[in-house]
Length: 119
Length: 180
Image 1 (cartoon, rainbow over the protein chains, first blue to last red):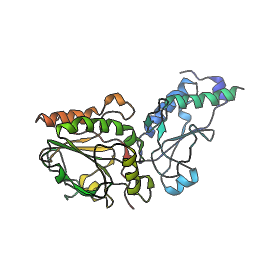
Image 2: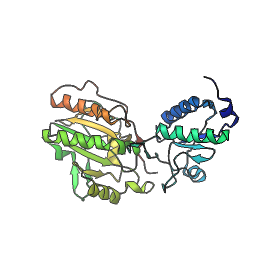
Image 3: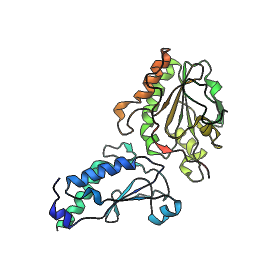
Image 4: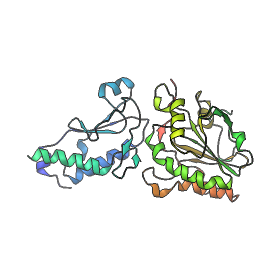
């Protein structure tokens, strides 16, 4: 896999926050890394962090697992969900409920950041 | 109820006595005479339970005319997860058209007795209330085309008087929210 030099230059900080009570984070991480690779970003650069306590959830403003942030911005900003240790409810593009974000949303968020970095 | 860990394939189910959302006490004995019974743990807040819910509703609608009984059970700690309170359960059932009772396991004794691990976690019983299948509804919560195929396969086998080919799968979902 070749690395996109422009994307590398503007390498965003990509984080995945997870909680052990919800198993979807591993699949979400794999999909996130796939999408990063497709865009020429380094898939190994994802900061994977466990949120293990309610206190940590408060501190991180964690509204559920998995949560993906790019340069500090949630790829699907919360819409009033309470902070806490829980599984996050995502809506796929076709409206279905899922335990992990739509790949297209992940791709769009990464693409937006990469594009911004080129400007 | 039996001790946790003693409930295996072909063994008798532990039973339960739990209130439904209208306050009526329901028990496994209500399903006496049914050729098969499905008891499944679910809840209001878990994306896996929500994603699989319509598939379970469809299966219940299709198998109920054949005498199969379904019971949904919520054991989550409502103090930490208010979306799973008894009131929220009632609100949901009154909003949606559920073809089976939604039972509240406030003490979490039923979840422990059945060794319910996640939502959803399904248990299929035969006419003698012996366990014939336990696990997930189908291979992928994200893909509705699976249509609760593992549950349906198990029910078809039980109704035909046969052993399900797949008696156990790994239940996949949100952990049951135990009280501290």
